[in-house]
Length: 465
Image (cartoon, rainbow, N blue to C red; front, side, top):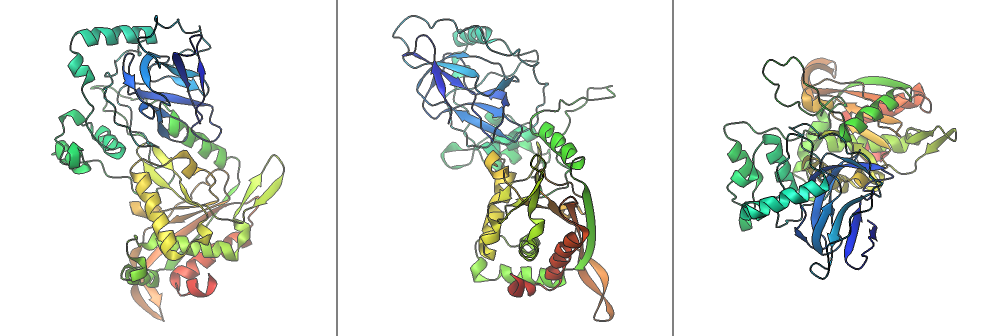
């Protein structure tokens, strides 16, 4: 939980520190403030959005009061433990607060360029009664200057500054940001005046809405789209930070630390596709999403059970192989901020309906930008579906800390020799990349062959599971 310390006027002024919102993270960038000096805040109200190396989350304040000071402007990277906002919890009971201590504050980073790409929101937005100021083209003002500007605004048009923010859930806000739509201009049709996705899409017409993130891309997908180039410009530079920076570092570290080996197999999945169609009509699967990915995930879990050595990790520091007796199944997903890999905890213990429900929740959460850092931690084996892009297969890079990743190619109708005759069959190509330090060719081949055998004859799920 967030800790807080008092200034010299302890009974009145509280300081809110940047918390560690992930696992051992050391810093976060302040993306935007939802409040300004002079605004009233309540316990649990979201006051800012920050981005870490894993995701972006919104931070609630833990007490009631009036904002006295914002210690850092938007676009600044702040170390965990540094005070980011001071709140007067007993306004009107004494003189103005003493000046903040001179600082143990780092120099603010330059303002991020306009056209920031949408971010993942880890927690829901708490509707506030304020509306943040639009970001200026130059660097954001220092706290004192921000207070002065806010005071000036309050004297010349306070209604415009203080009016309520449009009501919309975080995924809808992100969609509007993706499409460049000002929510204040959108006509809400949802219950209670809430703006829906359809409202945002309608406001974007005739501009086509940006497609929702397809599930499970190759690692090269998901790079932030560059802002529209300036007329005559030959280049556009995009700062690498936050999630994209973490992805780049992780992929380089994985590619040049773990010796990758990739094996391929092409398999007839016609019977699997028939099974998918049957399961969609099964009463036990009512209310959950059934698709080929579900059967592929179950097939991989069965293959891991038959070949447990693949579910391990290499401990370089201790020179040990760490054998995992549980499977946290990662599912790679593309988002506007880049590739993320949330995982299904203890997937090895799940029945098929339970796995389907968990997979559906994981996909929905990722698409809506609500994936939390905890959901992306602790994965053991990953699936990446490059087939959603119409790609036959790929050579996936291992998720750091894992030993294997399965890439699934597009399922296509192809001529195939079946029972001695050439017939049109549903065919796909699987690719398994693994860490050759702990998985040799025999073990990797057995795992891939088992997955292929199950997809070709899904009845094996019953006998092998």
